[in-house]
Structure formats: C-alpha cells, structure tokens
Image (cartoon, rainbow, N blue to C red; front, top):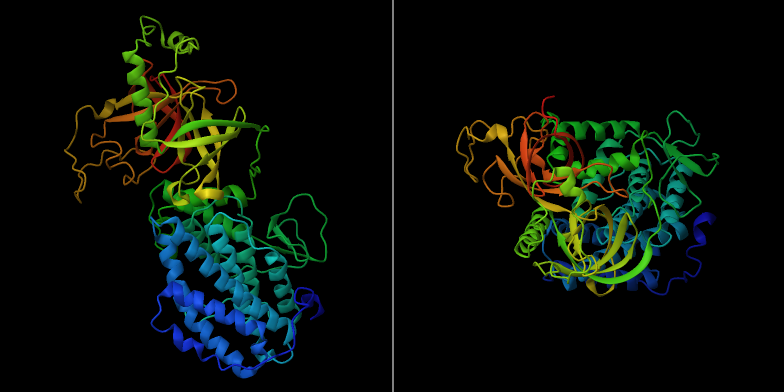
Length: 567
C-alpha cells in the first residue's frame, strides 16, 4: 500500500469513538441542508479517525446509502432546471461537490491505512471511492471548471490496487439503486469523460455522455500491452491526466489502453439515425437519439473520439489583447431581428441608394462602409452589453453577463461595436468559461465580419397544399417531407412564423480571411437540395438552389448555394 500513502501522511492515530447518532438529526431538514449537515459531520468524524472502528464503518455505509438518495435527487433536479439564481446555483454546486469530496477522502484514506483490517470490504470501498470521484469531476464540469487537483492520479492509484488484487473485472454494486459495474469499466468511463474537459458541455450533455458510456463500455477491457491496430486511447497511471488520444508515442509499463472502436461506431450510427429520422427499435438507442441535445453531443464526441479525420481544434492564429465594449445578440431569431432593424435604419437614412440597375456581383462589391459618416447604427436592440477581451481575424473572446444555461456551444451570436459602425459580425460560440462577478468568458469563432438580413421563399410551396395550424396534433401532407432534417419541432414555433413557404435567413458574403464563397444561414427545416428558392439579397431577388450544409446548431444551418437552377 506504499504507493497510496504519500497522499495521506499526516493521518493521526484514533482519538475517539463515535456512535454517529447525528444521522437522526437530518430528518426534517430540506435536502440541501441535509447534505451540508452530513458533509460537516462526516468531516468531523474523519478528523478523529472514527472509521477505523468496524462498527463505525458499518454506520458510514448506512449513512452514505441514505444520503446518496438525497444527493441523487438534488443532482437530477439541478441537471434539468432551466432557471436558477446565481446564489442558489453556487450553494447547490458547493454542497454536492464537497459532499462527494468528503466521501472520496474517507474511502481513499480507509483503503490506504486500513486495507488489512477491511479486506472483506475492499470491493465496496473501491467502488464507492471511484463513484464519488466521478461525481466530483462531473460537478466541476457542470460549472465549466477543471477536474479537482490530483483526482486523476488518485483514481489511477485505486485502479492499480484493484489490478494488483485481481479485482478489475468483478461486478460491484456501489449503491443499492445503481447497477453493478466493474472497476475497469468505471475507470474507462471517468477517464473518457475527462478527455472532454474544456469542451464546455452542458449538464444535460454530460449526463447523456455518462449514460452512453455506462452502457456501451460494459464489455470494454483495459489492456497493459499496446496494440496499434486496436488501441486509440490510453492513460498514464503515474500522471495526473485523464484519457489521451494515442498519437506518436513510446509505450510504457505504466500505460493502460483500450479499444474504443465499438463506441465510435455506435456514435456514428446514432448520428445517421437522427439525420435520416429513423427510429431505432432498441430501447436504449431510442432513448439516446430522442434526447434534445443528442445530435450536437454526438457531433462533438465524433470529432473528439473518431479514429479517422481527427483534427485537434486549435486557433489558426494568435489573438491580440483588446478592450472594447460591444452589444451581443444570442440565437438565430434574435440575430435576424437585429439585422432587420439595422437594414431598416439604413434604408431610412438613404444608405441603399446604390441598389439601382447594378448586377448582384456589382452590388455586393460596392457594399462598402463610409467611415466618414457618423455612427448611427450602433443600437441596443434588447441585446446584452459585453466586453471584447481579445481578437484576431478569425475569432474573439468576450466577457458577457449571462448565466451558463442561457448559452451553448454552437449558438449563433451577433456582435456590434461602435468601431465597426454599420456592421454586425456573426460567429458561433466555441468555448464557455465562468469568470468572476457572475460573467462568462466566451470563445467565438467568426463566420463573417458582416451579415445581411434576407427574406426567402420556397417556390415549390407558393400554393399551399393544406392549411397548417401550429399546436394541432395532426398535420396532413407534411410540407417538409423532402427536407434533409426531418424533425420539425424546432421550426414550427413562434421563431419563424407559421408560413412554411416564406422564411427569414442571413446572407454572409465572401471574405478573404473567413469564407471563399457566399453562404446563407437558414432555418434548418428549410434545407433541401431539390426545391428552388427565391431569396432577396442586397435588394435583388435571386433564384437559387442549396448545395451543401456545414455549420448547424439547434434550428439553423449554414448552406452554400448556386444560382444555376437548371441542374
């Protein structure tokens, strides 16, 4: 046990025994107060080394089992709550995290110092230690924070102990309401969750990933010998790091590996099922693909875990420090509204006089900003005030006063500043990190330095086939039968009106540093390659077909198009 003892060198000899009768005081408390109270009491008992007494160990197991039910109830509610005050969120997060941390410290210490005394309980101690460590990591990720200090090294040390005593593959039930799990599977799950650190996943996405890993890695094994054809991820058990992708490296005796191809293939299958609106028969697969964040989450996992076409996301160029104020608009509908008001004011000021008999290309080329005119377009259109902290030609960093649950990875954002005058820059959120004073730091990848409000019409739907009523359960002859994305729930709402043939979109011009061709951001459910669309761009009505989609999030997708409609 010497390899564990360096983390708990100052543990004193027992000072007292305890009856732990304080558990009865929890009755009548609200859930949060009960967890805070239990954490404090367990900490007091831990300081006195009360748990070296077998009677107290049994009491600990009982207390943990009872409080586990409470903390799971709190966790479930926290994950699904949409609106919560900053103060309550902080209290809940701290209460549950420190609860799991206290239990982890207790179980880790018991394994380290009383291994010989508690050999018959070692499987439970290991299972609960790893379980509470996993919950610590998850709660840090819920709040967009890094994993606790030394937790990866400690988890690996627990794994090595289980390996040494041949306990890796035994199915152990950590708590009465949880399914039995092996130490090796629990190790893989928490280490793969750790590989996603820094991606700013939402609570619901983290839970989706954990649920997926719990089922799909149940037969995955941890190997000590490296196989280049099979192994894609590894952990260095002597370092404080989670799972890492295998690139060019030299195998070592401290490394552990696993084959993840079966999980990746299932992720790809789920993405195809969602994209082609196929309902799987297998209940668990059906549950996964019906999750509201399923496709976005699987896209992220496929990017991070896929064996092929992996490109680690790095900034293409360094950002320069900057300090300027801005107004920001979040979401497709809101950005469209902002661009529409900007266009209306520009028309009122006569700034579109150049839209005469010029061709579309000439109009686009002549759409330059007169920097000698006063700034009249910088407005507060029910937007957020924010600060630009750093920027480059391809992205920028923002500080905004928003709750983490109000933004998400991939969300469309519009940014206006006095310096930019008549334009709204458009980008997508790539990173979310809480900072001081209740603000968020957002990493934004720019799509365009200027966007234009546009109106579009599906020419194939000019004569409606049937009447559509939003909110009614039956819709005959679905308008969107030929669209690429078949789930109409994100389109058929107040965001875009009730007429499926007419819709709002955003035109993004070709820019040397950002895009080699013109693109449109459209409602996702309008994307199909068969119909002809009439789109008003820079004052001219143009007939076109959509050709290819790439960025998409929620209810929008960015597409390329062609004006050659004869194909």
